Structure formats: C-alpha cells, structure tokens
Length: 250
Ligand SMILES: [Fe+2]
Ligand SMILES: [Fe+2]
Image (tube, rainbow, N blue to C red; front, side, top):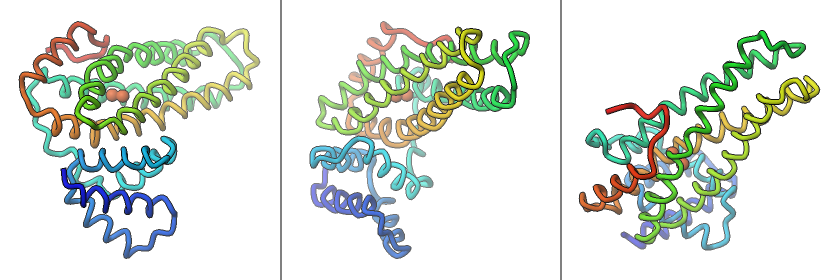
C-alpha cells in the first residue's frame, strides 16, 4: 500500500469535509480519486477515524467522494456464481427492490385519512417488513465472516462504520414491524408519522449502505483477500450461517 497516496487522500478527505470546495478543487480531487484503489480509500477512511472523525462525519465524506467516483468504482468485479461476494450482491438487488416497494406503499399510506384493515397496503407493508428482517443472515455473513477477515488484514475503519449502520437499520426494521402489528392501537396520525420516519430512514440509509458496500467494501475485500482457498473457506462458513428467503437459488 502506498503510504504517500494515503496521506494525500486523507488530506483531501479532510478538505472535502471542511465545506469550502471550489470547482477547481473538485476537478483535482476527481483526477486523484479516479486512479485510486478501493483498499487505499478504505485505509484513508480508517486513518480519519483514528484521528477522531466520527462515523457520522465519515458517512458524509463517503457521500462526497462517492459522488465523484460514481463512474469508476466497482465495475470490474466478474465473480463466479456462488462466490460469497456474488451472493451478497445478488441479495442487495433483492433488498433494493423491497425498498422501492416500501417507498411506494408508504406514500399510499401517507395519503390515507384513517385506518381500514381492508386496505391491501397494510398486508403489503407487513410482507415487505418480513423480507427486510429476513435479511439478517446476509448481515451475519458480512459481520462474522467478511468484516472480520478484512479487519484481520488491517482494514478496520469501514467495517466498523458498516457494523454500526447494521445496528441502526435493525432498530428501524423492528419499528416498522411493530407499527404494522399494532395498527389499531395507535392514533392514526401518530402511526403515519412514525411509519414515515422509519420508512424514510431505511429507504435512504439502506440504499446508501448497499451502495458503499458494493462500491468500496466488497472491492476492498477482493483486493486484500487474494487467496482463492480463503474465499472457499469463507464460503463454507457462510453456508453454515445460511441464506435469506430471497437469496436467488443456484
Ligand atoms: Fe451490510
Ligand atoms: Fe450488505
């Protein structure tokens, strides 16, 4: 890993966070970031965490630099079917489609004036929530196998951020579940407000989380874990944890 590059990137990320970004600086930053490997980006993020940057600020930084990198990242991953990362990515596709459905159903519910159990939206909300909660084996495979293997190789910043996000996402999934189950005991306006808040939290943050895993974390993992036999052993452990009801069948 090129230490000089990481130092340069750390400086650049700090500047990005300061808010005083000129068009010229953006151009310069893009030039620099385009030639960078995902693992180098991960290590620079880690240095920022070590220097005391809060994970929330790091997330803002991620947004800024991902915006610049959108065209270049994560495009060269040609993985064999059944590779642990290939399965995780396919599960991401399914999760993203549930989030689209959640967005649509929440919009419809927000237009309702009172609760009526005949409205099909409630069953739909329940169905979507069940699937989102059933993504737990996906997160377990990431946390127990993928993150820990990356951390063992010295990259612990990004997995730390992802782990915290899993916690936050879980809370909101379970809030959605509770709201869907207790529809008749809540004041309807209050119910709508809480549903809107949790649905929007999940829609925005889970999409963002998936984007960063696909474009930074997974490519980093593929770069730092280079031995096929380690991936094979990781897949065997992943099989033991199990899959989601929506994981595509081979
Ligand atoms: Fe994740
Ligand atoms: Fe994921």
